Image 1 (tube, rainbow, N blue to C red):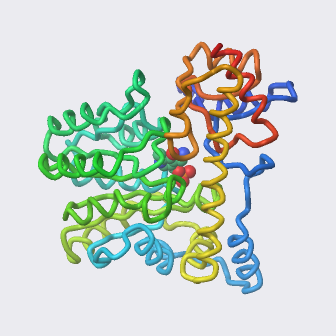
Image 2: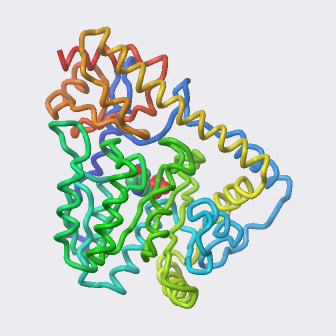
Length: 394
Ligand code: PMP
């Protein structure tokens, strides 16, 4: 008998399972607003012009595909420090290149399990599904802090702060730096200050997950939360990703940054992160890091990237407004929350039953939670999305 004869079948990933269902759906008018991938006005995943330029340069340069250092391409790590941490003292920050934002979270989770094995990890209710799974699999206890207020369609910041103030000192708090996934509701500047104060007073460990820097307002404004924690003198972990902001999903390019008390501590932390990387995948891939480092360090390409990033951000905002206006014209009023949200996602406020009807009767696919990917709406499918939502919400 096989040693794996008793291996149970794991449940399908809910989002990828939905995509399989979408692909198998024969209806030609179908629209996939399930998965979190930005698409352009023609429904295509874009290749940014700055990326095309660097790709061509790299191909012409004919560099061999040798191994990178364990912690990644040095020019990339330096560029990440500049982009994510700005003027902060870079010697205090340990950075490793990672396999996307997910890989950064995994390295962070293993490091936290090693250094603070009994800490509880607090994630927002709700949060990106993988947060719970990654920290639980690393052996840490995961609990939630209140976040989404369904009744008022906003963040319940008072309840959030109360929970943080009651958390055990040393607990890790996972925060979405901007463009909260799945709800789209972000904290205001005042809210962030209250969170920083609560984290500092209670002795909590902040981990800012920043998968969408530049998708809400601007690179600087979206990165403000990170700088708030660093400026408050707090030891802070930051996981970042270029999957969305460079449209480099499959290149798996992100980073983990750990802001430490001083340079000596940062050196020791980096040495531990490198052991985790070495024993997990040895060293990271070359291509995505080379692209991002080249774009971020070349002034002309950097300007081009910032304008392409703004283009993606503005297109999402246009679709949000068009959705609200279109729904109002179809008789579904009071949807202004859609334009108050940031990033790729919208918690539509639709119930699970409504989401199922949207899928079954109208071929518009979103998550059962009511989450819709606004970044997949375009002028070609907008009217179908509006009439489908109007039919189920009416
Ligand atoms: N964190 C959050 C909040 C996300 O939404 C995502 C992407 N869905 C990630 C991390 C991971 O991004 P990546 O694809 O770069 O692993």
